Every structure is written in C-alpha cells, then in structure tokens.
Amino acid sequence: MIARKYLLPRVIEMNYQAEQRLGVNVYLIDGGSEFILIDIGFEETVGEIVDLIRGMDFSLANCRMIIATHADADHIQGLARAKEIFKAPIAAHPDCTKALEEGDPILTFASIKAQGIEIPMKPVKVDRRLSEGDVINVGDQSLSVWHTPGHAAGQLAFKMGDALFSGDNIYKDGCVGVIDAHHGSDIVQFIASIERIRDDDSVFLLPSHGPAFRKDKAVLDATIQRLRGYLQMADFGTCATSWPLLDAWERDVMAGRLPNLGNI
Ligand SMILES: [Zn+2]
Image (cartoon, rainbow, N blue to C red; front, side, top):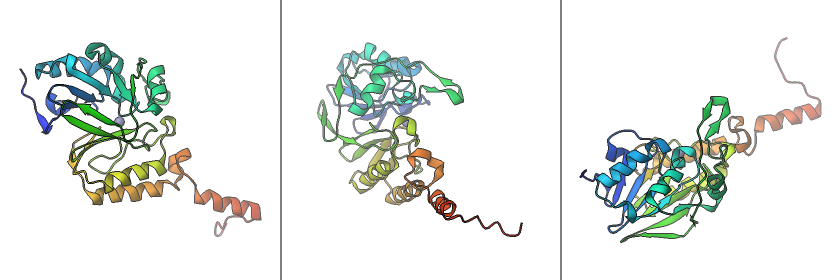
C-alpha cells in the first residue's frame, strides 16, 4: 500500500501523491466512505492515476463522481477512459456539456492547428450538471459549487471548509487561465470571478495548475488591476471591450485630420 499524502485534511492531489509532474492538478476528495475526483487530465496519465488510487487502498467502486472544472483538453481528455474504469458519473457545468459530449476539438483546445497541436478528444456523456449553489456531498464532506466564468464559460470552483478549489481562475504567481475567445473567455466576468475569490473567507486556494497556496489579497488585487487593463487592449482581440486608440483614430479620419508625424 502507498501512504496517502494529504495536502489538506481529506484532500489528496495526484501530482504531489505521485511525486512527479503528471499534468493538471487532479484532486481526490476523501469523504471517508467514498471519494470524488476534480479533473482527470490527459488520457495517457489516467492509468497511472488509477494505480495510485488503488495503491492508496481506495476502492474504485467508491468513486462517487468525476468532475470537469471546465472543458479544456488538459483537464478532461481522459474523462471517457476514466468513466469506463471508475464507472462513475461525470459532472460539469451546463456550459461545458456540448463541448464534452461532442468532443469538440476547438472548444476543448484539443486542436490548435496553427501550433500543430492535435490530440484525439473522445466524447463523453455528462451525467450530472453542476450549477452555482449546488452542494456535492461525498461521504462526510460537502462542497459548494461556484460558477466562476471568465477563463471559460463553464468554469467551476468548489468551496470546502476554508479551502477553495479555484480552477483556472488564479495561480500562486497571480497569473490566470488563458484568455482566448475560442472557448468563451470573458474578461469582465473573469474580473468578477477573481473579485469573488478575493472577497471570500477561504484561506487556501487549490488551483488547477501549480502549487496550492494561502490566499494573498494583494496578489489578487494586482491581478484584478491587470485584467482591468486588458479590457482596453488590442492584445486581447475580441475579448477586449474597446480599443481607445482606434476610437481616436476613427475620429481623426472622420474629421479629415492627418496624424502629426513631425518633420517629414
Ligand atoms: Zn487549465
């Protein structure tokens, strides 16, 4: 038997447990008589995760649910395989259902043609829809469901005691999940989600990538300020709400004013 390495009481994270980098953070919530998994990662690491869970003396039959925090391939490409092995229902936000059930390669980032990224995305049926305010009971533990759109439309987070499984909303260094129009990023909603996390009384943030950490309001404030700036930057394309430079240019064009280029 492998000794269980609890990150927090009742919480095991599979990269820490494996003592190697498997990929996305895969959290096992140990409810005593049963457990759930938050994300599963790429298909190629599912076998290793299953072996670890068995090795820690959990019965696979006690897996009550596998949750997709959202429908990005690095979080969920292994879901179909995991569902076969655990025979557990798959849960996700309604905004992720279509991408997961159709195995949509664009919405899930399984296909990024311009970068030569092309991985198979097996469709998987979503058995349970999780929405804001739902409560997930697992053994003697319970988690409240937060809908935190911004990175992706169907991004979920989960509050358990003083810990928040914060998904791709915020990482330890203040970075956030990628902002990309293709899977429904929305910067205004993203700011609101990070403000909600900042203002909540959770002490520990357990993100989907990188280390778990104690919440630091100053880091969250700096991130929120940065994202506010993105709203008016061309760098973020259709995710920005305006581009002041172009508005000023249009006014000049309409007024017949040429730009001041100095001595020419
Ligand atoms: Zn991610």
